[in-house]
Length: 97
Image (cartoon, rainbow, N blue to C red; front, side, top):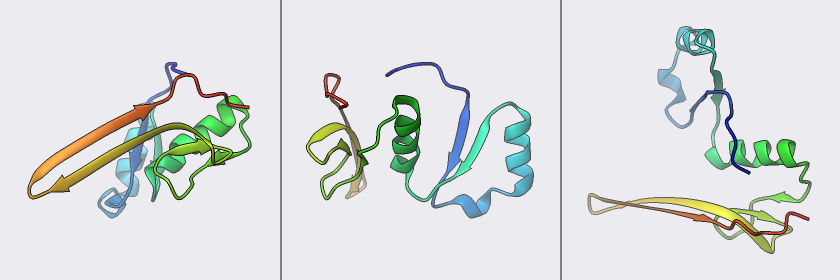
């Protein structure tokens, strides 16, 4: 699952501060430039294309799932009372079929 991919630059909720000139500069440096509303959609699309997965997506639970029963992974970030917490869950042996 892990491999070296070409550089990519993604912008989300603050995309308005990035101009078309900024996008051209990033692309000119050899990176892809993507405007996305939800970061996990980038991961989901990449996994679908790379591994030919059909039933990959989100459920009511956090993370990325196959067939709503097999979690591949999840990333979480929280800020509460000025304290930042983060976490990563990655299931390395999930059957992708």
